[in-house]
Image 1 (cartoon, rainbow, N blue to C red):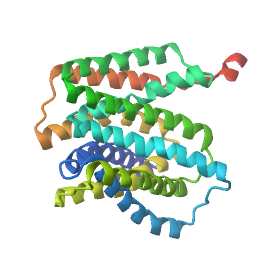
Image 2 (image 1 turned 180 degrees about the vertical axis):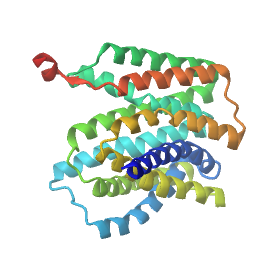
Image 3 (image 1 turned 180 degrees about the horizontal axis):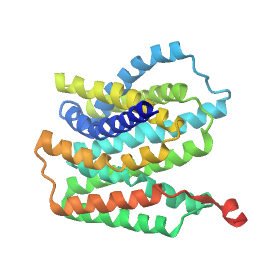
Length: 300
């Protein structure tokens, strides 16, 4: 048992470190290819990696056109639109740390929308978490973002990403609960490639400056983040460690900020540190407390 617990702890920390370093891998790759082009490389390599995995594991596939369509819609929001927004935010000058912080607030908006539209009731401490999270983000954004054309555009891009990942999460939770994760990932990777590759050609000219750092970033994002880290996450979930994963997930912006400091010399200010701490505390309050459905609440 202790050895299993140690393995689970290692898996959890592996997930958080890889997930946080993904923002730095994206920042590195974007120095050699524009966002749509870089994402086309990422999803193209991802499809090549997933083909043997799908052939060997023999997952179940969508049983109806409706299920296939639901998987595609969720994938369009969670992959193509979400990552296009976050990558363009960094491409336009937003730091990896702020990008990670903004996207770490997704549970706040997911919980609030689920309360309004799906009958899930938030407890008082969860509403406090929403307010804390938004206050922390506002502090960091006000302190760090320069609202010139580039700063406003990067903020708009990451906002699009945040809306997409929030809506995609709710959509997948509502319509793709029983979908096989392996076949769903393959379908969503192929769809994202089909959407982004034409944009890369038409908008960016598909210009690539081939380099080892570019290849390293693609490999890290596909093999380590999209495959190994996600599988570690689902392994922990299956073993009943959702709370552990959720609590460690709040460290993703911290990992991104520390790695950006070490790799790119972007030194965090005290106001940024305070804002990140407040935001992470807010997300922890929202995600760490179970929500009750409207029916359950009425029965209580």
